[in-house]
Image: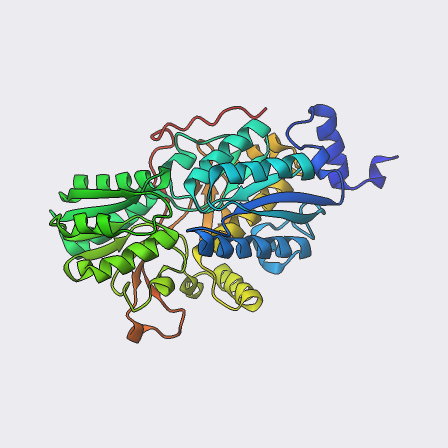
Length: 428
């Protein structure tokens, strides 16, 4: 067969196969006309509501990649239909936000489906566990929602990438806003979920406010993920003398703890802050409890007024699902779109080649302007948005929960790549 009679992808693949021994699921996983990706996301448990939103973002991205949608091609110009002409199918499993459950599901997809990429997580404990699996199995992992500094810090891996914002960038974005609004030398109480996300976000926020504004942490109430009742923690907070309550809880835990704080009368005495915004929080909490509350976030749908690609994404999402996307869906969609771009640019699914394409650190489009991935830790350099909760009377429609009050470029929010102990590991 002459070179002219085979496709460009087939030629590149043959060259890659001739030059490189098999690794991970390559080349077996990309030999046919269809490739598989593994999505393990919480569909039950405390983070299920956020997991379903994430899943919709991945589903829409797969649909757009497979059909060569206009929005997808604005992010990945070389995409026609599929990734390198191959249609994507997803193996979707319920992680329950449990690391072991997620790892077992991904492992099955690697073994049985030769999955070429793994994704998922709303829990950073899951993201860290998936990172380790990805490195061991040499299959790329794209973090879903993961706010822990450790995901691209001390637990970073060569085979892992994260698009969304995280504890340190959230703290450095919201910190100045809190000081401006509430002043210096305030007493603060934290509510912290007892795992890597909670501990690192609380540390980053506490460090910023104590070092830059003289705030004092008077109590840090640490609770297990999925706690059914927060009464004992809230009683301690009520008696702490705090002026500001910083709630780092997430998912259903955030909803319950805020509702119970209101019943205890705490929200009448203290200002509430949500440093790492939770999809659907305002809707789930209800009763306008988040009016005037500040939060840092990855995305809010009204950003469509500023970013044309956000508007295209919102329109496609609303048409398919009937509501405006939350930031979990945004992160899922853009992570997939970036991966498709990197594979297309590499011209092969060979994992080290795809990784090295990310590591070029080139400026690429996202739904919220141009971004890039740092080669040293695989963290996306992207803006963080500060939102302020609206009172019911201020809402223009039933989904108008937040006002975007600040847009902070990512570069100045991030620690140095080695500050949190990132050592990426080997390509092979």
